[in-house]
Length: 355
Image (cartoon, rainbow, N blue to C red; front, side):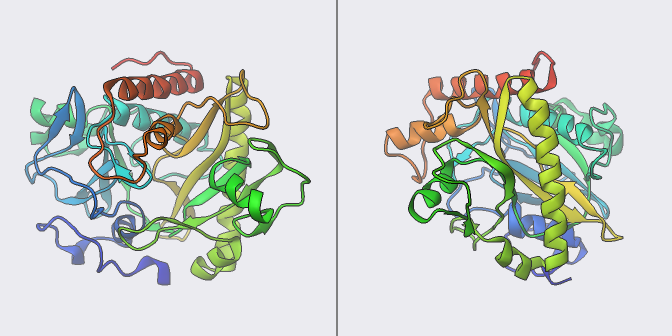
């Protein structure tokens, strides 16, 4: 399939033989976890006030790529190790300091959602959600404390897939870039909105599929129309992932609302297994990939109290720092952002957060 090939522009760790990598890895690099030319990723494992900014496994596993958040290693010909660091990005730029334990929160919340949605669509987890057997499937050296401290609680063992090169965004409420477009054109991702006189943060009558794809390295992601998405992956597959994504979003939205959180929108990613079955991949319904609002304070016609990195975006914008390299968050901003993520985790899972 045409979207499963081509990764020449991806910058890889020098010791990885790209010829042995699957289409899944190649496309994860190209479309999701590509290196950013504007971001610095230290070679050594680094921490900042107990945050893990970068992993270093000393070549025990081949490093495939570092993305905005995740470091990806090859375990074997069929399996990858996703390690969620504490890096955080906004406006396509990675902050120079991280959010302590953020990677653990993202990983454990994703595991919750993978399990919650498993009856609707298969996922790429190679071990059951919440499994404690990770280190049994890794080289014995990685059980040593210096490596275990980097991996435990923030890693997923996943099956390689062929990545579908779309960010499958589902919007239940109008906000962000959708609100900006609607105000000037009465459209969202080129779709004509038939609801009259929508206000900011208002719920759509039905969730809508608004895909995006990745621009070339160093450029911004691009919103595209469903018709443009069909040209990339084909009409049948595009319609299928849109249908699945809306079903997943609706189930998650209804669940979350009972727990005091509105999922305004979210981004899913999908792959294809060896039989071309659609599989849910990447992270799922986290504060990094979704907009979470407080149901208690929700009010149409304004911005909302959020449990996601909108808090960081607002701080950057207020200080004219959005899109600038080398920005370090104030300690207060990092702490408050972490608390927002923990609030979301606890409300959605019903579990008390513990590091």
